[in-house]
Length: 406
Ligand SMILES: Cc1cc2nc3c(=O)[nH]c(=O)nc-3n(C[C@H](O)[C@H](O)[C@H](O)COP(=O)(O)OP(=O)(O)OC[C@H]3O[C@@H](n4cnc5c(N)ncnc54)[C@H](O)[C@@H]3O)c2cc1C
Image 1: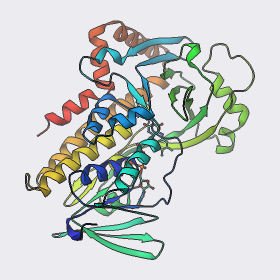
Image 2: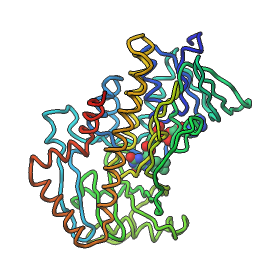
Image 3: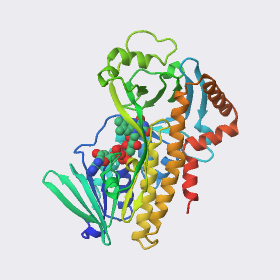
């Protein structure tokens, strides 16, 4: 372990974003101390989409291939209407001229986090302390001091920088005193996992299904191997209790309603999960020696599968800048650029696109719904428009935009 504690970077949170930052830093020879509340990495269903530009940045950590081996390629994705079926299909293969990854890689986020955890734990530069909850953080001229609660009571630790990767309720963000403006949706999202295979019924590996009463988002995940499992996401009204939402009959009705002609009989349901969804962004991602990345910096609805991807891009961007400062290649002013680049794209792309995706799926006005569906059909049928659309929804545009900000 590196001896000088004031050279190290403290990371709050060993979720997928904290571990990306940790691994990106130790690969540059920078020591890290990771403090994490959990004692075992949770495996509950959460994000599972890796967009092409994310696969590319993961090449810089030499983990893209290993991740690829754990995932499934989903090149085609669909917009559907609950009553009318397929509206438009988009094929990421049309971007094969600009990316080695012309698909969404579907892989459960805990597998990604587990892979990085294994690698980071092997490094002498990395100390990961589980069962530690960061309570407070203080910035000073010589670096940061944090206090964490652990099995032996409170511990105080110092480091050069602190990265808050401690999720939506970030204690680091609160210690920075920055705002987290936005909204919390009234409805919660119910995620049902089933081994029933929707592919033979014409469903692409990712589908967004519009309906004024109950929209759906469906996607296939690899699980323990072929044929994989499907996650079916739909909204639950504020009046519905968790017990009602989890009612077996109700859940069966939900996962069968996407088929025009359900075959009868029950589909197995392996997992039920319900969660509150928000659309919020921190007022600043950088203040002195303290930074925010991932859900600590921005949270959004999962429609479009972008939140985790943006978090990974934050972590890589910030780690490169910390590396440049540590090597003497840049001054600390570069951290303002981190804030400008990542907060701008989080606002302009992540929050804007996911909010638009949700509006599109739940549109109640029949005229407006018909118009949007016509636009999707048009876009999919016109190669130039389809390409532009894919460049935006598959995150190429946001990467380009971040790089253009100086
Ligand atoms: C229930 C649920 C379902 C989701 N489903 C989807 C989905 O289907 N699609 C999608 O794109 N996105 C989904 N998301 C969002 C996605 O999972 C996140 O964008 C992603 O996990 C962000 O990674 P992160 O590392 O920034 O934060 P997290 O994964 O939240 O990791 C934060 C880590 O910090 C730890 N921590 C928290 N506070 C402290 C503290 N004070 N001190 C130390 N450690 C702390 C936590 O234990 C956790 O390990 C979902 C989120 C939730 C909550």
